[in-house]
Image 1 (cartoon, helix red, strand yellow):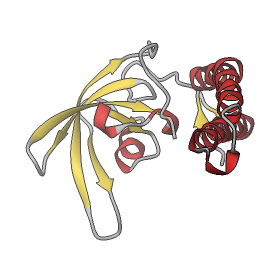
Image 2 (cartoon, rainbow, N blue to C red):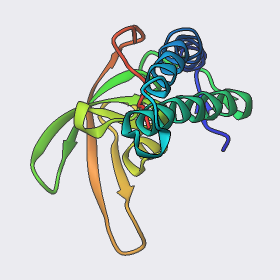
Image 3 (tube, helix red, strand yellow):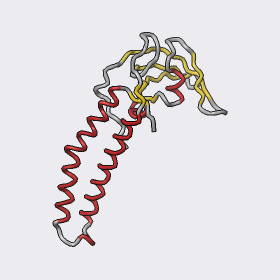
Image 4 (cartoon, rainbow, N blue to C red):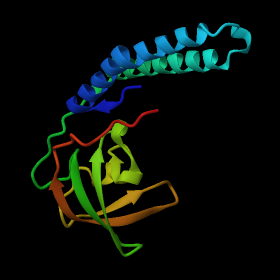
Length: 167
């Protein structure tokens, strides 16, 4: 697995694990007990649904614990004038003549629909470490790539609003 995670990512994952163990697990066990008390289990859909939800929660806990255990911790510090993790970057796409704003984040927080671009994505890999004014080639695959220009970099270290992507 070996995801690259920052200290704040690990902290958020540990908070989710604790919440799932203390709150969600308790609710799931109660739901299973309640459904079991309704009688015949062979035709009790509520029982099977409650068991499925309980197992889904336990699976998520194991997944998150394994992610923390195998993670490579990376720093989210960056130079003042370079693109780094948690920086908001304004990028000009030459091919489309459009300017977009993205925030570079680790893989577990990536969500292109919310403007959060993973440092493992082609765009994220290419612009990481570059400065305002740099023209960067984004290689998508062997046949296609495009150029972007970095227009602005804003240091946005406060990630208290970010949520981890859930699976």
